[in-house]
Image (tube, rainbow, N blue to C red; front, side):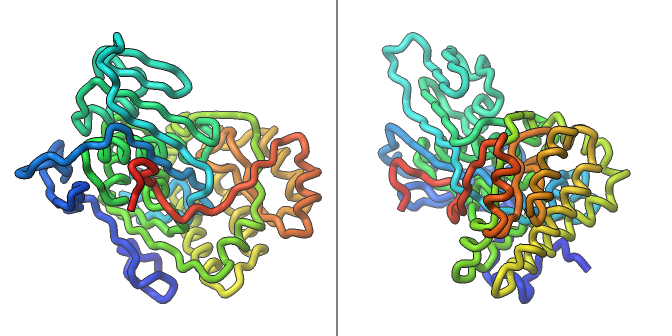
Length: 385
């Protein structure tokens, strides 16, 4: 029987984080902890104290993630009917966000640098939806300069949009002289993307970006999220990642284009989604063993991929299926397309003795090594202590 509540049990750390944004506190850089009410959420503010010296420049680094099982059950259309669960890990590929006070000598009070450059006079003129709404949400006044760069292309199935949202919110809080909890960052990012921008996405990416590490996330009816950090045994994570291979399909597609169809088909896909949810618990069990069984791990990935392809018409296509079959024929135990589907990265569980064979079979695709990242979004400047 799957529990939505996430009570501690033998396979979960006794100090797992039960994260519910209501009632979260935020710490000012001088140690003050305060909460105010704004827009239906508990949000931080600075009250009744002398203002600290605010940083002139802030730089954050926020990890991307790979989701191993349960993707799709983090959408409200599913978890409001039945609890969802995702087993995922943060990886050593990042989104970097820089925020600084823009000099008044420039003609424009707001400048944004990402894949495009925006120079505008008001926040309402900003075309980048996430940047615009984050600035509005935290009531940041111009002049301001924001720059972002990532280790991976956008829209590739590794949670980049949510990592950007989390990283920007983290930077803007620090710019205001505030330090916030990972739970608050995750829920603020969910609020921006899901409630304000109405993106048809779930909550796993924001939590993976904010918390980092290897986690089982439980998504409960009503939207509360439980974070269960996985016990990292000596060499277990290194063993797992040494048996993973990731290949770039050269195709990019926004998750919303696939998830909108999947969302519309939730009622007809309930049984499949429940089995995908249960796979997340199965991987948690595999990861808890003294030695990770890569064959079992790969078999769960393969079963999940077979189910995922049935959720929406654009999850996969003949080209992606061909790449996948080549890897399996070459010895991959199993795999999946990262993210919602339609492009991005193919990830496989491959034993060391089969890695060269799989790499030759997919020599027409770029191989991208990945490693584990234990930390969530972090301040690089000013240095986080």
